[in-house]
Length: 330
Image (cartoon, rainbow, N blue to C red; front, side):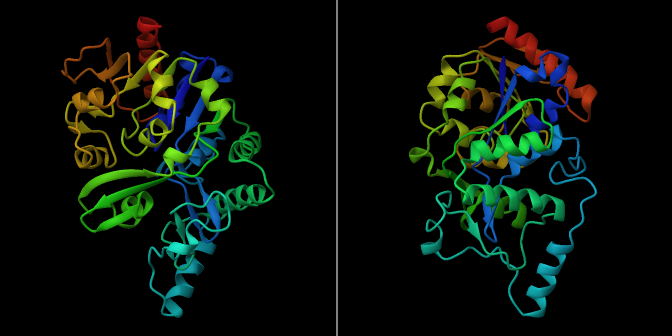
């Protein structure tokens, strides 16, 4: 048994090669839900959905989100209507008194559907409609995710990090905004001053997540701040990671990030944007997988390989390195 912590695209890319070293039926994936938003009343779970679509063989691998070949007729019409009605495109947050009212899962992440600042495909939207409908019927996010995983024929066991709401809020020079506004609408342009996981102190990892964290853990080359950070912020998770073997794949080659805003976010929370900074941020990690061109010296075991992942063969190589690192510390 092994557990992967997933967020963004780093760990889902790694999962393309999981069967090179692990039995997929013995793999659990705990996904970040701090990036989730309610858009037009629908709960969108980007990191859960990337794993769903990846495992289901329908992921748009050009973007590493959404469904390959999906149409966007509803999204396009929402934008057209907003323009025709002279409504600003947003992102349009709902008023503060609507942010935590009503549905139990609401918390500072609710946006109007007017002009829909995140492009959602039509088949993708069907997933969000089904998810939200089942939640409104009283099911937990964990149960809903399992139903959706069955629908996509996932082999791995996919779990949300919590059934409680957590919102990743980025404090920037332009004000405080949800991560999706910072990343999707603002293209990571505002300088980051801090990152807050709003609601994390009141959320709890589910019993299934707690059990998964009793197993050896692999952290893929995901963003340490906004992909892995919300999971770590849940009560008890840091202690659980300290008590089990953990291997992490660095998302950096020394001070060069592979993709995304990890360097800006690391800098914004006072961490050095580098492999050394990741090691400092992950004191619970027992061994690291670093790129062969990464000369960083760490105080923990290191396995080196080419860590760039551009396809399944690359993913298999990095997974084998992660398994080798786990073997050193398990």
